[in-house]
Amino acid sequence: MSETAQLRINGKTYELPVSVGTEGEQAIDITKLRSETGLITLDNGYGNTGSCRSEITFLNGEKGILRHRGYAIEELAGRSSFLELAYLLIYGELPTRDQRDEFIDDVTRHTLIHENLRHVFQGFPLKSHPMAILSSMVCSLSAFYQDEYNALEPEHVDITIRRLIAKIPTIAAFAYKKSVGQPFVYPDNSLTYTSNLLHMLFSVPCEPYEVDSAQARALDQLLILHADHEQNCSTSTVRLVGSSRANLYAAISAAIAALWGPLHGGANQAVLEMLHDIHRGGGNTDQYVEKAKDKDSGYRLMGFGHRVYKNFDPRATIIKKTCDEVLRKLGRTDPLLDIARKLEETVLGDSYFADRQLYPNVDFYSGILYRALGIPTDMFTVMFAIGRLPGWIAQWREMMTAPDTRIGRPRQIYTGPAARAFVPIDER
Ligand code: CMC
Image (cartoon, rainbow, N blue to C red; front, top):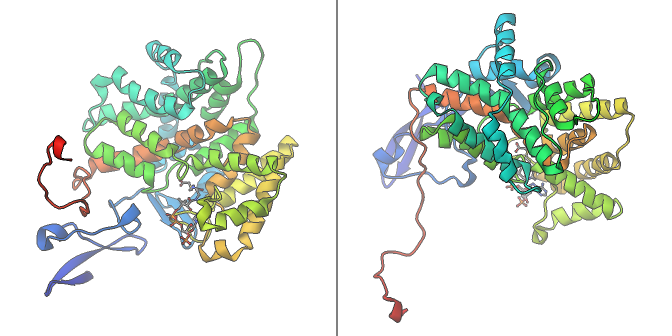
């Protein structure tokens, strides 16, 4: 017999079903709570709220486990490719060779963006943050494909998925080129996904540019590590926006906006800015650690802590290794990396951080690696968005096909004034 939980309130006892996941996690199902008891739950920041059942990603923050569709992130990062993982996340199984090749061909054929969309870039100010451009442009895509965005039509969904994955690097690279005043570089479909991205970012018409395959592979791995992370802020945004049946482009555009914040995807940019600050100030990490421990300062060490990981972030472990390898291969020393190492060492040996289970997260190292690849700081969160796109799509698709999906509409406890009479303006 399945477990139930009992709730005693106002002298009555209610039985609540308990839902169990495949990894043994348990949740009290409160779907009927309000209709049966008149009560709602209050959960600031949703730290105890399961918003859906999902077959896509499992993570255990206490044990530092991250798996997509059952496959460990360590294996995927070492043995898969970003587009193969995208297929796995979205369609549920690793593709056969034919399925993989067809998927890659389809994505490759859609890398161009409509010329009219290209002109939209001209309207943005020169120094626009690329996340502002990315979010706007992805939403603008919906204006170009409005005959094919019916979320309940599988053919429309499949073509939209391919268009999004194909065009997001082009849009990202154009956003960067716009910010540095260089001409847009069109995609080269003879290149792999990440080689093409590097080509569009860094080649210029007046000089030859050869993509470094080791760098393209490191970037591919970075995208893999960001591909999905279950119900985080931006993914929950996709589900919430999508639950109203808004089209997929609009839902992804909203997710990009959510990702932009420094407490979420924007942390990778914030980490680099923090390391720069420490470097400019003479490299004294202790001073920043002390400031972060002082509650009155309101200051936080960027790249440390995670809502879910309370032991270590497995993605950070993989990135740290790749980061070391790439820097060694490039023969580059980076004073910011030295500061990062010193900061990590200080934090890991400090009881303030140990007591609160604050460890370096994925963003702590990804910034250093992006920097080594020559990617400018304000493009870091854009790279995160490219990586997270398959996860957002997979979660949206799962939600749209789930029979029990309803429009997302949380409740609240009202704490404002009780009913009162309107006061005419002369009497206020
Ligand atoms: N530096 C100093 N103190 C911290 C930090 C930090 N980075 N993070 C959390 N704390 C303290 C916080 O002050 C609180 O202390 P106390 O219990 O004494 O009041 C305690 O740790 C718990 O913090 P919280 O804010 O309740 O934790 P949260 O789960 O709500 O926040 C977080 C998680 C990631 C937003 C937070 O750790 C943070 O702001 N980190 C810095 C930003 C960052 O690196 N974000 C990237 C997250 S990983 C990428 C992604 O998936 O988005």
